[in-house]
Image 1: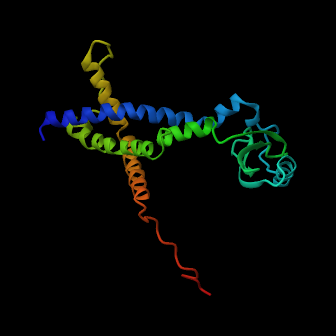
Image 2 (image 1 turned 120 degrees about the vertical axis):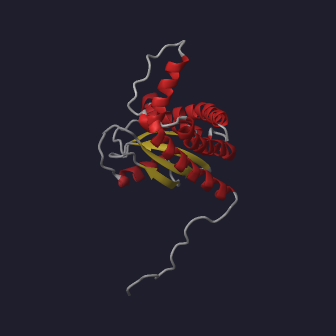
Image 3 (image 1 turned 180 degrees about the vertical axis):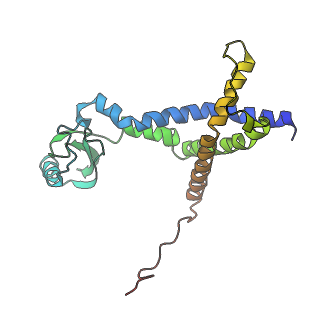
Length: 228
């Protein structure tokens, strides 16, 4: 390929990955703060005691009194002591999320599956589009691989410019924008490589899962390696 073709490929991949990556990174940032956003939005997500201790007996008693005959599916105690403990249960043919104070078992409220944290995490994981959305997100890895390969080709002798001072940034000066683009690209190159590798991993995994191909290591037979 000629230099101009490499540059066009780099620019094309950069434009697409920049647009989609902006959405992915924004949603990912919000997803990491999703529980804190819920904490600010409703009092039922706030623990009262802020104690790291968990009283499972008290939680079970509270659930038995308020939801007799219910079936507990899971209990999630967050590392942050200010967040309420989240209990998912099945009660009267419906699925509920119940929020209690982890240290005392006091009931704080209840809700359905659709909530801020779930929406933000689904948006980040698959753009809330299910299988197709997850394929779009993981396919970003292909564009990242193109950027990783084409960047050193387009930016010749790049290893000499890590400490090169860029020209003063001006709105009308295209060269100054190019200098800053190259400098930021050099220092973030390792991060792009990491994202490309992990992205390819998830893309392959999603493809294998969709094709229903068993790709996990077979667990050892019972008693294998035993000294008894």
